[in-house]
Image (cartoon, rainbow, N blue to C red; front, top):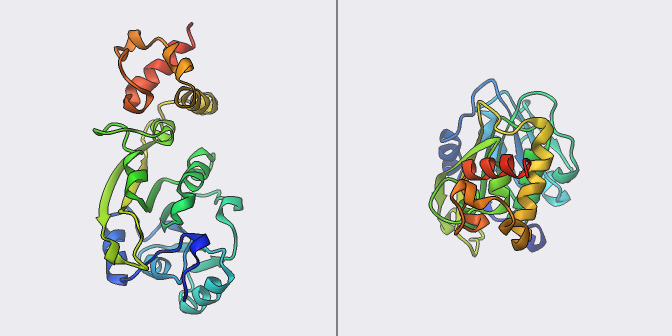
Length: 242
């Protein structure tokens, strides 16, 4: 199957590697798991042996036919020819494990973390640079999205992949990121939208960020990308008092 450049399709070569990656997850026999951009079904097929139900999303009609053919014997897999960004998420507990189109990493992650039907755990194979920007409490620079999801999910890189793991090889380094729902949500559901808006403004407008009570949290010399999750939470709480 020829790659469609417009769909950012880089397929994992080895079913053995996929099984190894799933082994680094919390996926259990009782789980429902979503596979976004399922391609020919390498991940969906491996998931079908490890969980109760797989919902495989694929938009490319050429790949959907191949996907359905490859998974015809798996009665616990549902194939949906649908744009995942327009899909309605399950209203029951589920997890996500996917090798997603790299150019859609941000909108896909925003959709699933901003929904009230958010998953218990997320495992995404993404560009290494994108993954690193989600690691808010690790050395380095955090992106806006990493700060926005921090009250809900704990992020860590579970596995770094090689370019030779794909066909065709991607031009960038990649990694599998894990996002696990925290036991305690650190911003109330009623304040989450305001918190996300606050983070977005601080990243987008330097003057807005510099007007925040940074001195009160000991971060006068820090940039938005350098704040920890706790510092963002403190700043969000303080700015509401001014």
